[in-house]
Structures are given as structure tokens and as C-alpha cells.
Image (cartoon, rainbow, N blue to C red; front, top):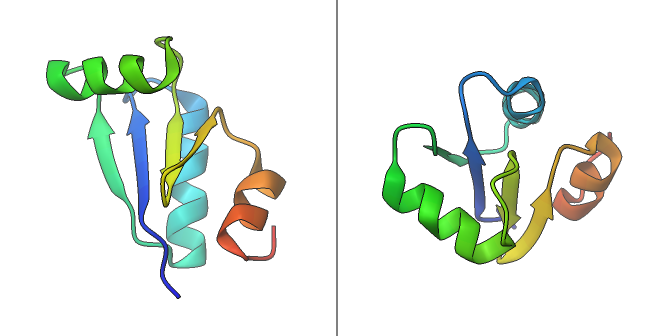
Amino acid sequence: MEKNVTIYSTPTCHFCHMAKEFFNEKGVPFTNYDVSVDAAKRQEMIQLTGQLGVPVIVIDGDLMVGFDRAKLAAKLGLEA
């Protein structure tokens, strides 16, 4: 079953790039919001997490701040 994956990121965030590369490598469709230019999505992210740190990854409503390949793979039911 395909999961709904969203990432809040910035273009200069190394861990954001790693997360998006992981999604692409594993064929996981995702929605990306660039919070450096989208003020509404930046505010949404802050309301979700209480902070400005990226990446913020939301998988079927389950929040994850930062990039942890093994944890992300487990949440998606994939091999790391």
C-alpha cells in the first residue's frame, strides 16, 4: 500500500537532499515543500514541529524531523 509522504525542505539542506535521493532511489512518490520560499508551508511546518529545522518528513501523518535512513526505511516498510 502506497504511503502519503511529504517533506518540508530547503535547497541548501544536505540531509534534505539525502532524504529526497532516498525516496527517488526507492521509487517512493513524495510531495516536496521548499520552506525557504513558501512562507505558508514554513508556518505549517513550524506549527507541526515547533521549530525551523529541516527536513521534516510526514508519512501518513507520522512526523519525523531529520534524516535517519534506517528509521525512514522502517516507516515505509522498505530495506534501508
